[in-house]
Length: 177
Image (cartoon, rainbow, N blue to C red):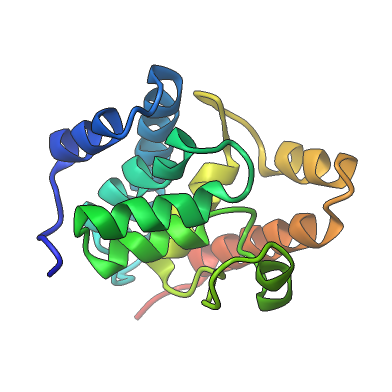
């Protein structure tokens, strides 16, 4: 059975209990700070966003880095979150935050469990996008992240980050009634 959404302190305790480094925890806090800023902008435009979920999802998004620092940390984080009994909404943020999502074909090549690894909800997209704009603890432009992906020959991921960026900007510029 899933537990209720943890608070900020409990989320950090989950990272610590799973042996996430201070560096990872600080990164997660930086992502949470930016994600909340973005979420507030969406809220001001009358979008339905869950600030608590976004904060906790952002804090826990790199839970899997306690096991590995490659792309598989999303699946490892998902498994740890399931073991912790975290709500499905948090688990989805964790498993869908890498790149700007992992396609079914890419997941199959990585031997990941059959699942959807592309951010679906606005809450998931906000955390994913915020993560792309934080390097270590520092804010970076999304252009920097896209260039890094192209430099690593991760062209499809770079294109998905560009699409996510364009979607976020378009939504924020749109007038809500």
